[in-house]
Structure formats: C-alpha cells, structure tokens
Image 1: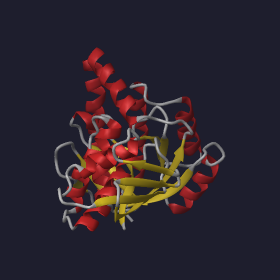
Image 2: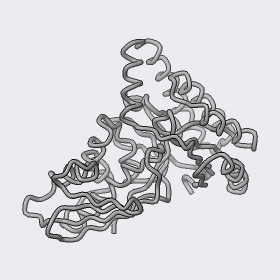
Image 3: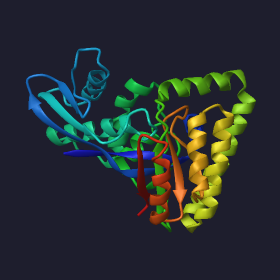
Image 4: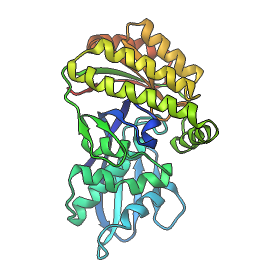
Length: 300
C-alpha cells in the first residue's frame, strides 16, 4: 500500500506558479492506493464509486494512462485501487495525493525504486492531466510531508518547526478548479503585469518572513502574515464572500490569522490557532458554517 498526503499552502499561492517561493505543509490525511496485476489497466476510486479503464476519456483513466506511459515496457496490466480521504476541489491537494499514491503503488508492484522526492516529481504526469500547468508544490508535499519552502524547479527546502502549528481547515462549500483559477490569474497578469507582479513580490516577502517565524516559533507573527497574505490574494480576486466570512469568524474566535489555501475562488481556508485546544474550539464554531472542517497539526 502507498500513501499520498494532503497538503495546505501556508503562504505563497499563485506566485509559486511564476517562480516565487511558497511555504507548504503536509497533512496526516490523504490517499491510500494498492496495485495488483490484472487483465486490463483500470483504476477504482472509493468512496466515489468510480471505475475507469485506460483508453476511455474518463479523467482518472487519463491520469493513470499518463503515469503508466513512463513505467517499464514489459509491465503487466494493472488494477489500481485508491481510497480517498480528502475532498476534491478544496485546495488540499487531493489530486496530487492520488497521483503520488498511485505512483507509489505501481512502483511497489513493478519493483521501481524512487526516493520520495523523485516520486513527487514523477507524479506531475498525473497533475498535468487535471491542472494543465501545476507548480509542483502539491506533488512534492504529498510525497515528502513536513513543512517546507518550495520554489518551482528547485528541491524542497525543509523548514525546522520550533512549535507545532495547530491548523483549522474549513471548506467553503464552493468548488474550485485549480486549472481554471490559474488561467484566470494568468489573464490578469497578461492584462496588468505590473500590478500582478507587484502582488507576487509582496507575497514572496511574506513567505520568507513566515519561514523565519516558523523557525523561531513566533506564532503571533505567523498569524499576522496569514492575514496579510489573505489581503493580497483578495486583491487578485481570489477570495469569495464565504471564504471571507470563515476567515472573519475564525479570527473572532481567537485565531492568530486566517486565509484561503490553494487556488482560491472557493475551496478551503486555514486558520492558525494558539494550540490544539484553541483549534478545537475554533473548529466547532466554523463547523456551524462549513460542510467540512478538520484540525491538522503541521510539524508535530
């Protein structure tokens, strides 16, 4: 059995697509996958009750086909089964977690040896089917975990976490397509390159300061950086009324900071709590307004 972690971007969304840094954290929940020899190449996904055969135009079949293209030519046909414990379209890296888990399961079956980092890189084949031009941060965190600074085209830079981060995640109830939102931001940048690049530069400065705050255990400063990042993302028209409401409620309940995570325009928000007990209380309040909430520790 292979595992792909979910992830949250702590700071740095969208700028990361253009070579700026992002600070990300792996989650303890994600996707498990197994692979066995079969008479046909097929992928089964639970709890979605989806069964897709390579050769069809089903998205999961296209993703599996992309991964199989680089596997040994003398391989047998395979049946891959995945159990997904993450919501899709929520900014939690569900697609990347599936890709990493599927790659890991096939590597095990076929005797392919890769490091975790190599598995994350290879599974970009899967992500390109679903997201067109992914930054690679989701795959990297799905494979490696922990807290890390990511810059496109460069190795992950692990970040030492002095104090574990108690994160509250709440789904807005609004679906978000990473591919579509990345394209939307690209159109903004094409129309107003100076404004958008200035925002990306400001976000990059927040990311670098957040790395220092995590290493120093300065949760108050990290929360303030969350809020500043949220303001910049909202300026890029990536927030929604519901995301803003969830961020506001989290802050009113004592969160040190709150922001959207992932592509935005729907999906999830994250709030930084003082500790795990506070996180539970904040989650309880957010659960009154969100269809899915959870508490996740990063760097524990």
